[in-house]
Image 1 (cartoon, helix red, strand yellow):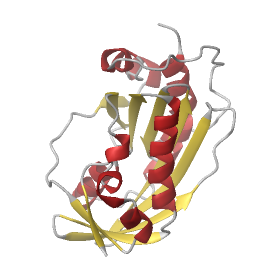
Image 2 (cartoon, one colour; image 1 turned 30 degrees about the vertical axis):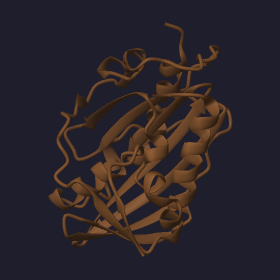
Image 3 (tube, rainbow, N blue to C red; image 1 turned 120 degrees about the horizontal axis):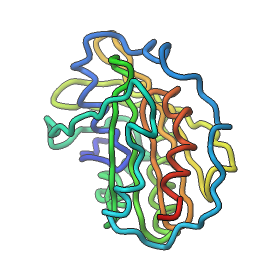
Length: 231
């Protein structure tokens, strides 16, 4: 069964569309990334309010001064294709139209940023959303459960088939109120790209950090601390 999937709130489509254009195998691009550590997260003592405006979320995103040297903003690019097709993942199919296309994560208040690292193909992106705690948790639960429920499936983007493997990962429980994480491997034309996604909800704020695994591990705590800090 096929399900047409437009841009998801987890940023998967961007990774799929960029993969065929990679000139080198990105499997080893994390060698120059900083060593990962969860201990770098500063303590967070502020409970986020139930709802934040998009402008307020924008100010809580990581920037170059937070990330350190070697990071450059990645310009926003228009998607080359309006949608992709998912094949062989009944869990995604069962979500139905709106959910499968990321509709459950189309929250009214959102902000995002993306960076490249060290002049290589390593990237990291951050998304912030604000809504009620229940809506945030329910929306992310649906998408992550569906994707990790399919250990292998295929995506067709612009006529190019891409094999996807997913794996659920543990997240330290001291990060926020709810946590989700997964490792996705996109393979096509003999090349593979590994993307880690970690989502954390604290109060009425949802943080999603995606990209090279070492970069996600390095910055997730820092991102959560800034996102939940008092203005």
